[in-house]
Length: 145
Image (cartoon, rainbow, N blue to C red):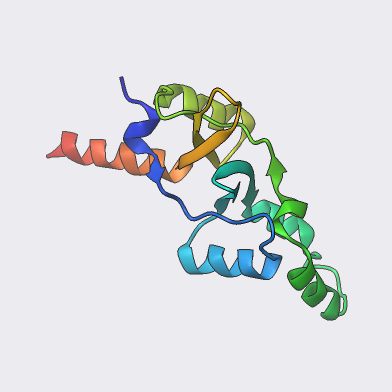
């Protein structure tokens, strides 16, 4: 059975709760990420997506002064825009179940965690729609050859 462990991205780029919106946007652009887990002292506390970032900034369709955007970029932190306590999966979760969760809730990614008896969640990876597409493409290529 295919599990999340078989297709997830291990050691994904992460944010700290204090990182500013400007830093988040820079990281998303430089690393080509649309979903960044937020980690505090090694534990998953949230996730920031490109959609979260877009919702914070004013619409480009509305005419407005540029200075409010600059203030937002430097003053808003990840902890202010992240989704707290995101839906997660474990490495042993069946990949089909993770795909079902992504599809039902229209998520682009799920943090992958190791759960501890204390209830804390240590981030061990992330599984994205792109990970599923890459896996599908690899299998398709194997079949064709």
